[in-house]
Amino acid sequence: MLEAPGTAQRRRRFLTEPLPESFYQRDTVEVARDLLGRVLYRSSPQGLTAGIIVETEAYLRDDPACHASRGKTRRNAPMFGPPGRAYVYFIYGNHFCFNVVTAPEGVGEAVLVRALEPVAGLELMQKRRGGIDNPLSLTSGPGKLCQALAITADFNYHPLTEPPLWIGPGQGEAPGPIVTDRRIGISRAEDRLLRFYLADNPYVSRRAKVEPRNY
Image (cartoon, rainbow, N blue to C red; front, side, top):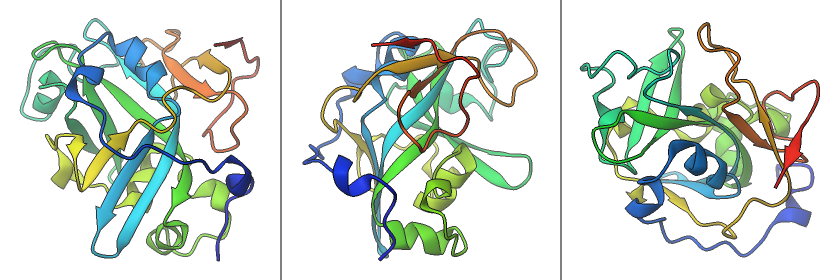
């Protein structure tokens, strides 16, 4: 059986009921940080897959890198709410990115989920990822995690308060220090420190050269 390094030691009794909509109807940066340590679940006829959220990025309405910065369009309409919905888009012609809509309805902000620590359905994730051998590579990036959990644009607008795609409390707080860093793969507002990740987690997609930690 495929087992991610350290998973057995970190495995906990997670609370699986979905987080309420009110969790997302807050400041986007706060939500981006508070999502660390929560668990993303995806149920399907093939089985349940799940992972601890270990890396996120915030995208704000006054942020040139945000899809909604120039107003509402057909493509970015899910970003304008209601909060707690999924915003999924196709990028680079080959993979999907999964975002959580935040802030009050009509604002146009979201949090990109960049990486997960897989905790359930690892063999199914491996199959979806083409038989990849290294468990650290299963969900260590936005495209990877969408492929591993079978998240597609069909989930646009999906309320993350109900199956088959939802976020549970986990243990209710980030397990350890958080690093704040620049976002990845953008060409605007590159200097804004809006990426957050668990400092000691091996599933993070990319680490900062210097890790300023905070709790």
